[in-house]
Image (cartoon, rainbow, N blue to C red; front, side):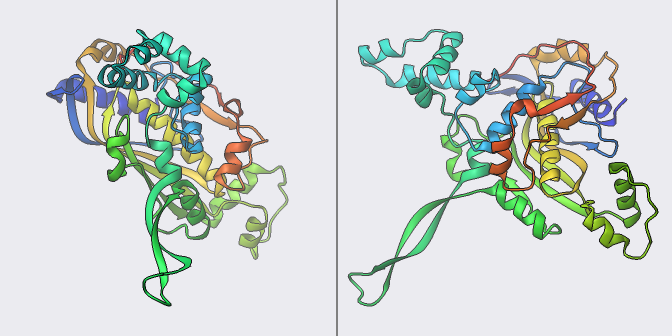
Length: 371
């Protein structure tokens, strides 16, 4: 049994047995606070739960969507990923009923069910541009965080002779590329943080970030462990002189460091959201490790309000009866470019280039999604 899945099932039991009953905006929850889950990548196992079948392709699709910096669900829908459909549909219903009073406009947007809404997003680009937009959520904040800056211009101030004119401008900060750059040149930094909690734009988001930030941490690999990595990665078993070993391992591109990632969440739908988040951030750790030539070490989920909805209890009871199976591994296509920028990675990587190996799970369990 994997440690993380065992710990996850124990968390489900704890919430059911000791959780505080609360009335939330979208139903009754049973809640605990301040829990953590940890997974070690030491054996190469990927933290994808086996006590229910997980939609791995959707996990990959959403993460690539975030990394692209996109915030419109059309990319997701075109790739058969529907985890954000409900949020967009609720937003559409609310705005149409609130704002569109003109009969002609109502006729143009009179969609009465989610299936027709999603089909319209898929087939009508103009409609998708308007109603598939989710606001400045994760992808926007990760890749284009808006910053207001005070700049010099090339123009002299017409009022104050000889003085340079300054003005405000908005620039997008690429947090993902920045953290990759920093990992490559300053891996001991304590500022390896990416945040989605942009206070000035929260009210523009269709859903405030649940997992609102993540942080990387590195540590050096002892020379003896680096040698083991070399022997595992190559068929060359020739004896190596102890003198100059470190330089030899460097020349062989053997990583010098291990990389860990901790994500922070203010709110966790533990039956539905937490398994998805763990796998998504686990995949992000693997991708980043390859981009900075480090060994993936540990994934830590740091969770605030961790809850089970009242309508999820029976399904949770079914899941905790199940015996976990062995965890799978991840295979990346050789055509992916990990050595350049995040855009180089994105442009070289299709959803099908990230595959599971050895995933054996129990049957799917349906958990209602509370939008």
